[in-house]
Length: 96
Image 1 (cartoon, rainbow, N blue to C red):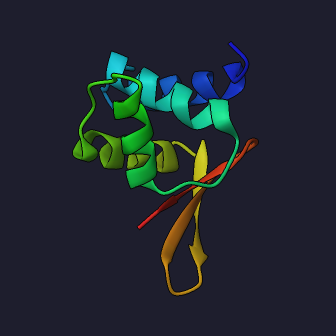
Image 2 (image 1 turned 180 degrees about the vertical axis):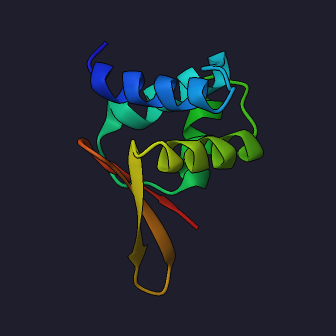
């Protein structure tokens, strides 16, 4: 796995909080770290649905919040548009 360090950090965070690295969280994690570019959460949802992934908008937003809390991604302000979430060692994503 190319993002092994981030996956280990995220999995440890989930475990400390009594949560699991569910298949949905894994798919979201992999999608975020495979592209290494800025994108909005809704774009992520659209792209995943285009690939036939069954994931809800709520799952994406909750997953992003967990990734932020785990320190795997970080949120930054992007002008008037909203906020951007920046993957700690790779690309970034934008959430609005």
